[in-house]
Length: 392
Image (cartoon, rainbow, N blue to C red):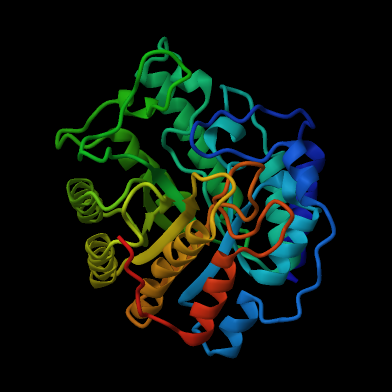
């Protein structure tokens, strides 16, 4: 009954919203264009093997309350063959960009809930557990990044956004997690802040100010609001970058500080954007550091989330060797999570599913054929493999 009430609520939300669209204002997290979606809606060949990831997790006895494997979709992929492929494979997902400040509350008195509501309805209808990627961070609107904005204006806009977002998702039983802040610290361990103009990757919210302990007020305020209005949702501190020790030490220090101030933080997230020209998921040293980071999270009663993993290849078209590296790069991260799954909650979420033309990052090619990466992930889960493949 609750599930159907939630669906009814969101139909009412949709009927009360404008149909006008807002242009996505991000730098490093792109959505597919209509042309990309057209390429992805060709017929999917039926696979001989029906062992999809969600089936493997059940068949092999994974604790489905502690171990999650899923993928990100965007709203243009709903009601397409991309959605069909997702529903065969997964029961866990992350909302791509539709909950971000740049979309939901781009200016004072302007609200755009259509895209988020459609994703929430999709999750409710299909019993999908979802994580809200709607953090306070760099993916902010041009209004917020405008150099004329005052600290009070920014604080008011951010407060309105986080309050309304938290209240909107809190009663939705499909929503399990929310990134509260995202990309707050640079890879050299400094607070990420503003830049001139409104077209660069920047974090304007730092201009709100710092508290007496030199912690950005926006971080404290974001968790304060989420603590008050998203009591049913687990709250995640999400971070980008690689395995830079100076960055992660600052992240750890900040989480401990916030907890000591009384804020609830339930999990640590790492985006996991991997590149074949940078050592990480095929490097023993970097994998060892990631292993220690997961251990730190669990030892401090935090879940550990790989929130946005992809693996970019740069030869066009990719060679067999490159596709093999990609497959092992993806699966090595999953193997670490399998190794840690008895110590606490772990999640693995790909930042998309389907490659675009001349872009080779995800687990399906542009025609929705499974790539070696997806086959390797299935095999890894089926065998509960923890043996890492070191190539760098």
